[in-house]
Every structure is written in structure tokens, then in C-alpha cells.
Length: 508
Ligand code: NAP
Image 1 (cartoon, rainbow, N blue to C red):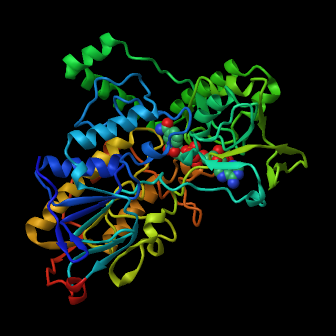
Image 2: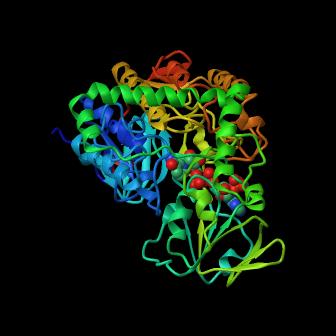
Image 3: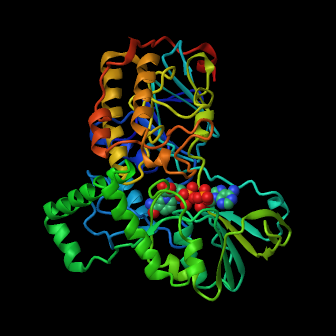
């Protein structure tokens, strides 16, 4: 297996392409490079393992709510998925196996948190300072993910609480919650997987709900040995299943465009599920969402509603006023004393922390450029940030579908883009007008979607202006059609400055 080729110049490590992050997107990008016979790239990973969100979200009950035969690389099918919706350890193992089997581990640099990435105009490339050193490459790819940095609630007095607190994405398995008074803050996709697991052994569990989610049945099953054998011997059968799952997901998009027949169907599925599982009128009322279906993620679970009706579980909807050393004080003046508070409050997805450390021409940071929300040409390139590609950035998220499809689309775009850069010895920087026009088109398409009009607040909209900056407002197939192939049209192309390294660097 060919190893990573890097030059060491003093403390500076030089290569062709630097990728930040080794989750589904960064790892997939690395595999694409490797399979194309490129070896001059490095992956900077802040943790000590690959896997991104599937490494970090190891809370009890963590699983994917997109079917695994679809939520996996198309170029690396896994006939042996144990069930329809695989759990976190199995997905993480799949990513680790991929990294090893595809020969990309030697390209990984673990424990490297990026502190600053800056475009060096005189060298036509990116200098990246990390916690351990400095790197340089003509091309930089951010694959840091959009669900990687936990968002913590701003509750007055939270810092005074003497009990244990952790975020769902930073689970502390050394803490034994059995028999304890546990609170879960949030009722999103993470919380509804955690709650049924905690309820099995917590002494008392309180679920703090701010808004009720829509929940539909989870049509899961374990694959038999015969099924797995079939997928193994006949890859076409597994591919047919993948295709069927893809079109099943794709056909849900008209719900988000609020096409009445589609809305009625999914809404009755969700409300029937609630009616079937919750017989108590007052609990059912609390669990009935007050916004249009699809405005927030539609959740899938068969055991969330039954869990809320267990004797040791309570759903609290009065709202949290503050906290003190013993627990939560509700807005109605009552208190809920706790030993553990799990904050399942989501991620910094609208304002990505990685944007703060990436500086383009004129030293402007991505965060400054994106203060009114992320925007990118072809959802991947940013004007003023030459030879830079952003994976899972602006308008790449999905309300319904497999993010791996979006990732693979961007992988192809970036692969072709980097080939263009190196084959022509150029720098590519999207034209500001082209970027604006592209983003305006996205905003036009997002008008009328349930994410914008559905009457909820979600991480899909930017808090500064309510624009849809995180989700893709169209079919997945349309994303691939528009953004799956690099074209120099819309970019400013200039000869790449390959001038000698500045003196201070050579001396370093
Ligand atoms: P989330 O969907 O953002 O949900 C956060 C929850 O915390 C919401 O219920 C929110 O209430 C509540 N919350 C936030 N701040 C609060 C505050 N200050 N006080 C009270 N409540 C507060 O986060 P998540 O559940 O971690 O999921 C994030 C994303 O991760 C999902 O949308 C999904 O894309 C992904 N995910 C996927 C899976 C999977 O199976 N594939 C599993 C987990 C997560 P409001 O609703 O009222 O805002």
C-alpha cells in the first residue's frame, strides 16, 4: 500500500491536499483520493479515532434513523448490516474498517485540532496551524461536519448545579445513573433514543420538553443470516434494496414542499401513532406538536411514547426558569431535584465553529463572512476562499434522506475540482456575483417549504434572519444534478502562485 507523501520543511509539513475531519465526509474524501491513486494528502483529526459524529455520539440507544443499506458508502456496501437501522457501535466499526481497508490510516494525523487556517497569497496555498504543528497545502477541504460541536442551553444557575451534567454527544459512561434522579433536556432525535434506555434503570426520569416532536413508527428488523448471505452472494440484490430505500426517502421531499396529499398522509401516520400509543388525553395533548409536520425532523420510535407512560418517568412541559445546586426550578414555581441532567440540546449547526478559524483573502474569517448565515457556491466553494472546499456546509443538510448521498456528491465535485487545480496549476475562487446568484436561487426555492413556513424554530434557519441556510431545499437527485460535477464556470481562475516558501518558514 502506497504511503502518504509529505515533505517536512523544518516544523512545517507540506502536502497537496489537507482535509479537516475524519467522519463520513472526510473519510469518504480520503478514500476517493486514494482510489484515484493520489497519495499526497493528509487528514487532520482533532480526536484520536475516526468516525466524527458516529464516534462522538455513543449515548445509550444511539442509532441511525436512516436505513443502513442506504446510510453507507455506495462504493463500499456492507452486506452484513445486522438490522435495518444499525446502532452507533456498528456504524462506527464500519467507518473504522473503511479507513483501514482502504489504506487511509497512514494519512491521518490524530490529536490535531485546527487553530487557524489562512490563505497565503504569495504561495498560493493554505497554511494550517494545529495544536501540534503547521501544515501547508495548495488545497484545503473542511470536512469538520455540521453536527460536531455541542450546543449547550443557557439556563440561569446551570453552573451552580452540584449534580452531574453532560451533553448527549459527550456521554460519560463512568457515571452510573441506575436508581438516580435523572433529567433529560430536549426531545429531539438524540433525546428520544436516550429516554427509553435511561428509563430502564433510572430511579426517576424527568423529560423536559419545550416543544413536542412528531414521531412515526420505526419499521426496523434484524437481518437473518439468510438475508445477509443473500446480500453477500448477490450484490445486485443489496443494490436493489439500496435503490428502493433511496427512492423511498426521495419520495418524501414533497411533504417538505407542503404538497397537501403528502402532508395528510404523513401527519395521519404520526398522529395515529400517538393515538395508538398514548391513551391518556392530557398526556396526548402535551405530546401533540403545535407546528406543521416536517418543520423539524420527523422522529422514528416505537418505544418513546410507551416509555413516557412508565411509573418512573414524567414529562415536564412547564418550562425551566432556572437551576440551583439541587436541580431545576420550573416556570410554575415547582422544582425537580436531580442527580444527573443530560442536555440533549443539539449542535452548533447554524454557526459552525470551524468557520471561526478559516481565513481567506484579506484575512477575513468564514465566520465573519457568514455572520448572516452560511452561503456557498454550488454549496461547496466560498468567494474569497481560494482552493477551498467545504463539505456539509451551507444548504447541504436534509430533512428526509441520506446524508451519505450528499457527501458522495460533494466528494465527486471536490475530486474534480482538485484535479482541475493541479492539472492546470491554477487557483480557483468562486466569483462573488455567481455565489450570490446561486444562493439567491436557493432562497427562492426554500420559500414555501415547511422549514420556513411551518411555524417552528429549528437549527435549519439562521437565527439572524430566518433564512434556510443549513438544509438543501430540493430533491437529493437535484443536488447531485447541480452540484455533483465541477465546472470552472462561475470561478475566477488565476495561475497558481508557487513562489518559494517565505524565509521564516524555511528556517522554522
Ligand atoms: P435537536 O434536534 O436540535 O434537538 C434539541 C432539543 O433540545 C429540542 O427538543 C429543543 O427544543 C431542545 N432544546 C434546545 N435548547 C433548549 C433550551 N435552552 N431549553 C429547553 N430545550 C432546549 O438536537 P438532537 O436531538 O441532538 O439532533 C440534532 C440532529 O442530529 C438531528 O436533527 C439529526 O439531524 C441528527 N441526529 C440524527 C440521529 C439519527 O438517528 N440519524 C440521531 C440523533 C441526532 P425545541 O424543539 O423546542 O427547540
